[in-house]
View 1: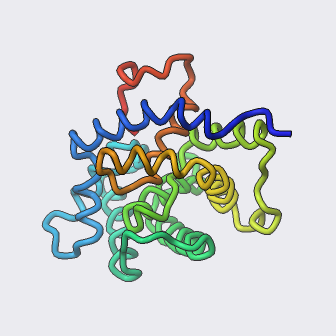
View 2: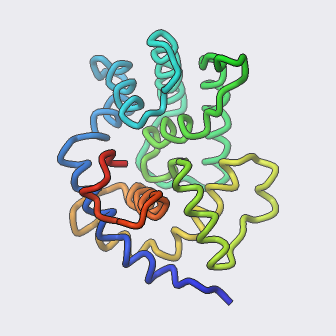
Length: 224
């Protein structure tokens, strides 16, 4: 028997998540990046998208030259694949993730210890820009929240996705939980006219995973 009610949890965190969303809208944090990715004629595409990645600390440890190379790779993927704001079937999401992850891996520098970088978060953020209504953003806090929620609600990833890597497992349980709370998220997102409902759930998970007891967004500097 599950020992947590996911709908009750969603109603607890939807308010703070919506407040962060409204602050994000006021600051215009995501729209310039989305325009840069979806419009190949947009001026200064690379710089605009690079600034967006930097605002989410997704390019830490990269030189300026390497940052531009990775961002250019994301834009090349977007132009080749074609971007849209529709939902993505799960299998298509994972296929696109692996292809973009491979492209990012070819352009990203090795770490200072000569090892390949963990590009899951960066790839998911780049893919979200391409398909903002189809891609969950991978984030350490969100992942930790998901694993805890899975234990409390007795959910687990499907056995068939385990061989597809960490993001495939993450996305599988992400959508299992999201599907149960989507009506609550949709109602509040529609109320403020926000079209990217998946991002609201991203922010709820990020809030749940905060390493403190407070959920007062005034204490949270970065608006995920």
